[in-house]
Length: 206
Length: 364
Image (cartoon, each protein chain N blue to C red):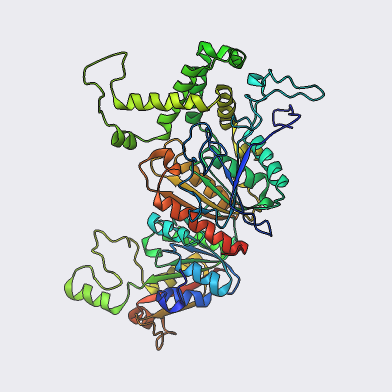
């Protein structure tokens, strides 16, 4: 699985750009392990993964990647404090049972948390809800409400509010549209919340 | 010196090797066998004439690739395929051996840790300071865990398969039925059957039949036999159902290759196993500071060593900050799945070892 970075999902590429070389990284919801493989090969990281999907875990281990079957909601508690430099949660926050507790655990076991999520505040979603009066369906939010795994959708502003409430420092953040263009609204959360399809935050404890 | 306090003056460990040890002596994999396995991993068994017990896994181009790795497998201490155990001649320090006197039930109780100590001595004798990997399923997986806990610097990668950090009450209960069955056989003669040349075949066969059920799953039994009958008429004393004759066949072939006293010794070693007990009940402490890379593998239909037990080990390893891979393989074949043709399992094992080989700097 020697993917080059350009084949990687956009948010993973952005996350990879935020991780310091040689860091200890835990990727929660690591999919087939693309990010940890990339971090190991290009950044020399000690990168490990957790995934709830058994078929993906099998594939990842079969590719020689250190991945364990586990659940973000239940399998973080046993790690010692400060086990990692970065704990990554990419496009998974909206699918966990207890997002706030997962964030707490992430910042307990890691010095930094890198969290990416699809922004539910994007104008297309707002427009569809307003115009059709039905749960919006887009490329990112592509499952009907009754079978979506995304039980905790949030917006960029929601996330800022949670970080403040929990006393986390937002070290970096960015929002991108689907093509990966970030400007021109990067400094304005309200604008990002309207035009950003995906958000990426780097947090630490205060 | 054994865990029980007594000591064995001379110990023989029977072993086989496959593949070639590289110049750096860095490509050795130790395979630990299960309760009734032995060192004949990937070759014809001298007693049964059948293929090796893991010849779907170990060999050229297979998941444990003997073109790449040097594979060692030894018969456990207390076993009956050449290693010192109840069926070998009793040795006592300062005394000449009488070849007519076997250890029998005088053989001291051994533990999984004793077995692993003996393996460590063997590996040292072979001039290998660090094993690239230790791999084993079931009781072999317990040995893998013990290796990683006792000799972390000597194990680069550890693969405990379908195993547990301790024997559960249910595991012990099934073993006890087997032991009682052996005790109840008049031919057992308080363990001194070797003097008369008789063997407690009935008792040992029943022990094997009970154990064999625990190695399978309900689905596997249903798929293989269902309620199919041999005759068709109702009978009490003849075997009626195919599953009965299958089990009887398993029992009767087993007694030809296995020693009853060895069975007692080894089942006791399994029952005694509780890795955390050595560390005040804290399993993470057993692996504190370890740099070994782990891969735990369990199977969905294994009710003898269920996934929850492998998961508990994985979590304990996380608690120790260890590098852990862990997967449950979907299979309806029960505990025995690890011995059978399970492509997902084989891919996982091969991939994990391949990844570790890269980290260990082994040439491809």
